[in-house]
Amino acid sequence: MDFNFTEEQTMIRDSLAKLIKDKYDFDTRRKVVASKDGWRPEMWAQFVELGLTAAPFSEEDGGLGGGPIDAMVVMEEFGKGLVVEPFLQTVVIGGGFLKRGTTAQKEEHLAALIGGEAVFAFAYAEPKGRYNLADLETTAKKDGKGWKISGHKAVVVGAPWASHLIVTARTGGGRRDAKGVGVFIVPKSAKGVTTRDYPTVDGRRASEVYFDNVAVGPEAVIGEDSLGLVELVTDEAIAALAAEACGAMKVAQAMTVEYSKTRKQFGTPIGKFQVLQHRMVDMFMEAEQSVSMTYMATLKLGEDDVTRKKAASATKVRIGQAGRFVGQSAIQIHGGMGMTDELAIGHYFKRLTIIDSEFGNVDHHLKRYTDLSAAEVAVAAE
Image 1: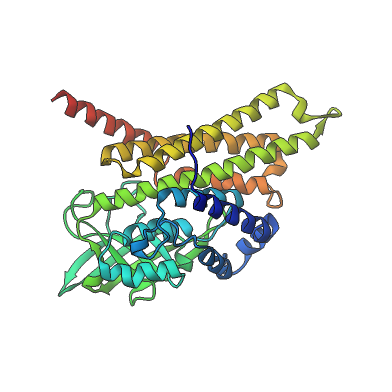
Image 2 (image 1 turned 45 degrees about the vertical axis):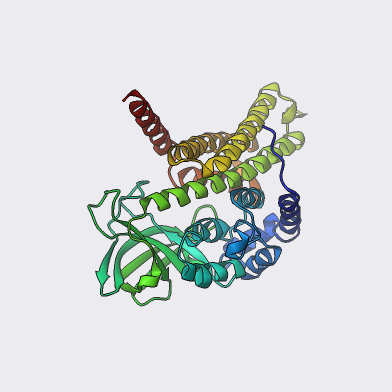
């Protein structure tokens, strides 16, 4: 695949790579992850200053005129550095909803997001929902001109740092109906919102979020029947997440090759053993194939719904399988020490493992792809 970045995208990538190298080395990241807050607001401010929060948005929305490719460039570099700051949750997902919102929502919330004053988290998953975006027990009931939201959202990544939540809730229909999936902007400080914060295995922070008759006005509604929008933004998140995985896989493979040159067994560097050479070549190929799939998914985000969904699911399957192979192979070659907290490779393995389960694992997306393909065949046969 011949894919050339623009001058602006190349500049963002190079500037970000330098910033991460200078300010986000592994020892620094370990200290940040172990700290009370778990992130660095001052680093987020530098990302804002660098233009990362503005890059994927149109000039009409106050951005730099970019799009999903710009987000892909940023996320790959974040994957290389295991950056924990919530770019995916805030810019890709939060911004993905807001740029499709009303003019008032853009002026109030999207402008604050781009300027770094607002941080968003996506409260969509529920304890019994698995990966079905329409499986919602959280409800939003009409209350005069506004709404009252009640329910429980699980593993809301980035919520401890967020100022606002993007919440999915059922406005009508049955628990798993495609109709009646609403999307709301809820300040985390709103009365009735409570959270239980905790660290995740890959070094980030998440929350269980509880809503008890949380009152929001009509201006908080992004959509009352918006499952299609939720699926679109989630597919955009999958493409960005795939780019992060590509960055992590590239570093994990390079670290393993370097380690194999210094680790000796029977007086010989293990990198000279042919079986391990073959394994590391396979790791390289898995990472490169993942890059191609990520580009494909990103470029197809603007296509029709079925094409976009199939591309996102196919990419998520490839990323999940490749990430598992690269991560597990890296640990096997490093040996038991690869899982110690002091060695960086174990942290890349953990992140790749978690990426597989975000927004649907391999099995989920295999089924989604199969169902979409079968539906296409059925329509064509009519």
